[in-house]
Image (cartoon, rainbow, N blue to C red):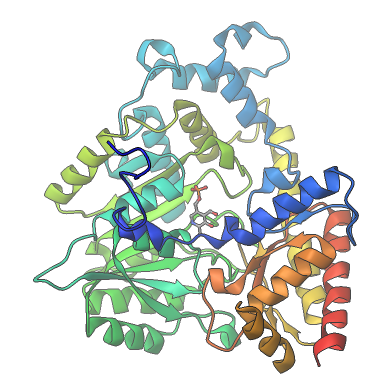
Length: 479
Ligand SMILES: Cc1ncc(COP(=O)(O)O)c(C=O)c1O
């Protein structure tokens, strides 16, 4: 073997991997890390610290974990704590209940690949209460976060048919888990634009346009909807969901409903796709559906625990078997993560020992979310050249920015897109790290960035103030 010659190179590696992009942790985030190191070394910058506004990870921004969840996890991991007088009885009961379903009563042993039965039953009970339609634990698969499960479901479409590639419809803007995973799998993306001038509504004419265009070269197989939206923060109305379901029915599309922000609701009620499908009755209530919820979001915000579920409805048994066989190879999702999911699906109820503290913690988190959404909306819309839709759900603002023509030219000269140019300048001059709109997709000629809104009040105010000041300076330079 010639050791100077690599066995695997960019020419012979799986070419799909070379196309994977995930802007949330892309070059801008890497530069932010570098800037932090430079600040640590005492190198002077126009700012004192880097503000991470790129990731939707609430605990990374200072949100405290829910005590009940952590007590159950601690007990499950270390049952000796059962004798502790400091932990309430309902947390102990919960841990005992979960451990009773673990092999030999330990979270150190693998669960079945689909997840512990006790957890899947709890998910089904939660869904039954949420939708008013019986859910079955047999339709639930647990995973290491929604990312893991979404990838598993998208893999089902990585198949050419009669020599024609498959395509999956995704919103633009979208969370780049979808575009990145489809690139990795070699599945075509059929983007449909959300209507920014109409609170990011999902227009069926646009779905039809996207479908027609993609159908010229591919078999369009599935339709992804992210509701509440990331990065767009809209919550779809029931009527809008009905239109989407009808569209999917008429075009033989498998529905993929990413509903991970269903508990991050600010100003508009959330309707699950499943509930609306069942309310519509046959034939819509008989369609295939995959819907996802994760512990990374909502009030739990336990991203590091990597726990989520997918509910899979009316899959052909052979497809269900194939998907489950593929999941078997991965052994099982983290059993501690499954404990978190159990708590999220069934939090303390009135009358239980943990309830008062739980309800306070959960209400504080929700109040913070609503306050930040209102502040961000006001602040962004008060900056000349900025436009931001109301943030109805999720935990992001996605303002549109008028980038002056001279700045667009400067960006072209620098070989970057105008939004990248803007975001790099913002980072270098203020230390604020956002995610450029190109990472999510945007109408050609429009420019955005996404920022998380879950910072502490002081940091958030400082951030909004710095962005406004930066923008004025940018305009002075390029207008
Ligand atoms: C819309 C959307 N879907 C899925 C995910 C994946 O979440 P998880 O942490 O459970 O993998 C995220 C994470 O940010 C998201 O924003």
